[in-house]
Image (cartoon, rainbow, N blue to C red; front, side, top):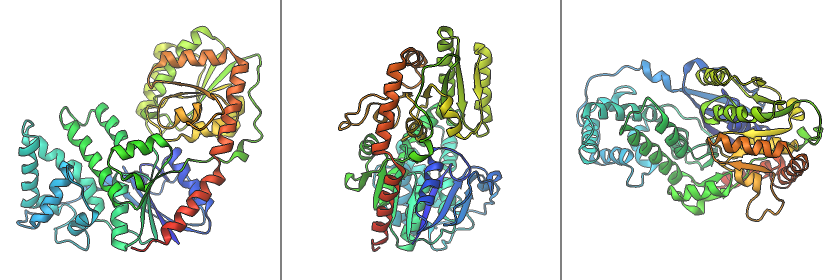
Length: 475
């Protein structure tokens, strides 16, 4: 059986939770062949892989969105779309009616008649659709700005829809965005099953980014946000099954229009044996070390962590902070973090870059996760497997990992605070730091929770069954 994993903005170019999940999945099932369809932002990343490919990974198709910038457009074409196809494009933008992937395939699949990749944008039909959307929904905006916004918004999707798609027995997307729609299209073309595993809620994450962005201005933010929710609806409708990491995600997916009958919760898992040699936290003299295993990127909100540590340092002069994760993904944000350290004159902050966490975790007394968005963070699971207590933000599955699910009676493995609340974060860090018996008990509870619910073996066996079941589905 060949499984095509469709990924976006992650594997194999970025080291992080989703990428680690992909690598673990492939490594855990050597009996299956895997193929990666990867959507990236910049062509400069082509071939620059951060992971060693397992033997059963048989190939990768790399698609980079900045390649669109070099495309040529040709002259206008008249009456290229049927009335039904115009209706599909209208519904794609407006998002009020459910779309079927077969309808997009009818426009873009099978060697369509447009002149080049940009051909559809040079049709009078496309212009008429955009004008109709504008007049009905957005007439309060400048039309020229609206037109070019819609063109920029649709170009990546239309570009990807016209690329060759690999053959496989199962298509498995790790998000509902572009890779979700492309996975649905590939499954439709090849008459194969299509499944999704959603780590975070992709459309919610894009909404958060767009709200804070500079490139989307004013009321145009709502146009972009609605579009990504539309893509999620299309991916959910196309999928045979949707897997997610924890119950709260499943509830959100239902709210966004996914059929509850399709959804199953499958938690992440960690290799417990990788952490078995790490001793429990101890009470000791010398520096009190606080660790954070995070990529230095905006979504991890390292600046809030630094502000919290600034307050901790005022009351606990022997505290040290270790930020363990890649620095190269967002140089601008790393520079902002360094400026924050300099401005606040914070001492004993160490940016280690990417490291082998099993070598650093034994030195840590307490772990922190400051993210503003997460799914089910492997960093927390691995830290708990290493007998380390946590202070986390209330994002993704963190509350469940720290306090347990409704049927989990183990107890509390740390503390959870609101995202961006550096004062509450500092107070919880200090509370745990000052109480060694509490810290040690929380660490024990976290270890027991991972051992009973979040092992690698359980994770792999579940997906082995999922692929077996999917492979038996006839389309």
